[in-house]
Length: 92
Image (cartoon, rainbow, N blue to C red; front, side):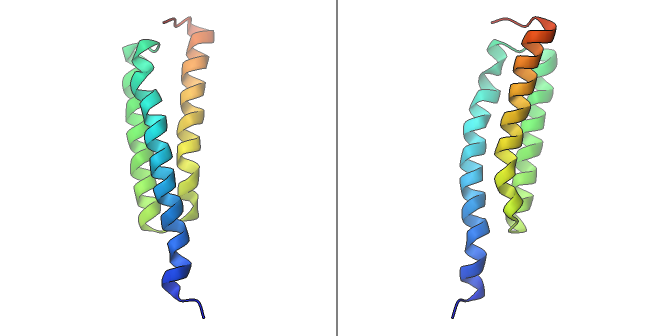
């Protein structure tokens, strides 16, 4: 007979993996300063920290939605870096 603790381990494992993936995405946020100007870089970093806080909150609540946070962070990074490059002419 499965216990409640066995059932609740799944969201925690997903949250730990999402946290590791969020750190990988954070590396790209960190090195974006090579391409992104400061006026866009600081809000981008703030957004990454907000998403990290949301990830922790979802992990504490044992929500399966924690897996979505790194993908939201990656999509935001791609939109800002490539959108800024195409629309605003940012270059390395």
